Image (cartoon, rainbow, N blue to C red; front, side, top):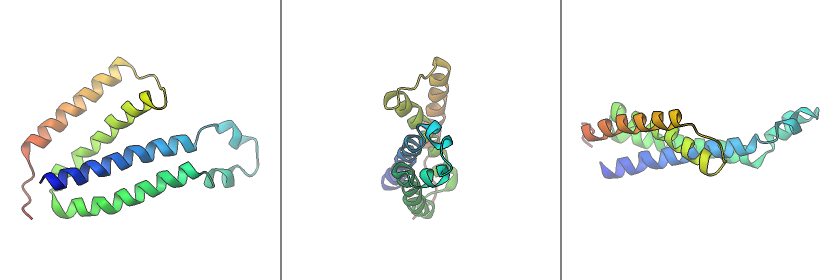
Length: 124
């Protein structure tokens, strides 16, 4: 089960980094509005390709997770992406995160602790 949890965590890290890459790729929106070639400029942004690529690799890894664990056990780990995005948005993107949002992150982590303590019943 430890190997499966590590794979689940890798999928979540990839999702978090993908979101950060997409955000970086969409910075400077005014630049896109000032040109008729804006859609092409958006598509050619390397950060957007990076984000999409990470999502694709993460999806393939998720298939492996689904073959090893109960969905009711694995899927709640997706909440870690919310936690990671909030944390990395504040630290890396310098976004302001309110106390109420941090309280929500705490509730998510508490719920995930309950899920983890229940274990996964699928035997492989």
